[in-house]
Image (cartoon, rainbow, N blue to C red; front, side):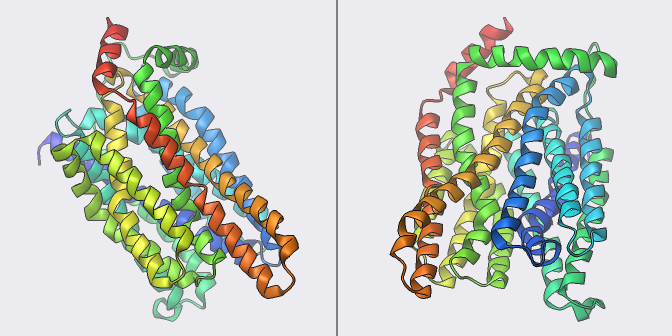
Length: 443
């Protein structure tokens, strides 16, 4: 294997490694285990608030931090080193979840929040290494390969973890709770182990004038301010980031809230876990093939297709009543989810200065993290307003449950606004104009 292929596969293997955290911990077991184990006996609404605060606080910290550390990485060629640092912070925190005892929700929240910081911080540098491992001709394919490997790797370990919880005796475990704790530990081993391929195979080019870490910190903070000025002059980048902010908000909100929404309208948690598995395994080939469709029909056009499919999924989600519909939606989401993420990441690389990728991808990831903060709040706020409006009409317990479900459906329906706004802004993004703006900035 030559160095180019080794670099590409080493880069993609990090998605294989860290997606175990996104799938098993963030999307799968942590929300359920938090309610049933670490917050056992606590009011459901209170435990939801505790978990939401942890997610928001960690995401806000990463959002503020990302552009600064991205600029530092650019100045001193520290992208790979900082990826490794943040990745293993996440690995250690994931392993620490194994040790958190029943009822200790405070420790669970703290460990989980630091784990999110590690996971999200590492992703900033992972994304910024994309232009260094892939040529302009291959960048869409390589971006899709990364997401595809993530779906496959995260899905395989999640499948094992699901089997552990459904059949703990097969693995010599006492019960499902013990199986979940061991699942967290398995994620840490998986994430930390497969990151070694990235460490060994990805080579980061050295800048002509590498600075010391102290100098990088100083200039990196200064760069944080000047980047805002650059983006102001790069109107196409600014417009794309605005569009991305809205539609990726919708994508990430559905990822984070799908299981919670399914439980709110009466579906069994085991059925929802199966649906999540379906999305993972459909997403593996779909993310790679979707990127090829981007090369054939145009990246811009395929991003539009993905946004439109998500809009239809959201509308369908409001109306669905049967379990089979949730499975069908899981398949449809798997077909476009990785493709939209991958093509957005590679499309952005066409609009930014390559030698400042860390800095610009810091802002790219910052918007993604702010989106995760806003999306769930939108669902919750709309749901509470609808419930508060209709609740006085309930006279029986049956009507009360019906109103609760209606509120949840309206809440998820609000996400459609994010896809509509994102599509409108993205319509006005002109790649050729973006290149001209970039040339003028670099002149």
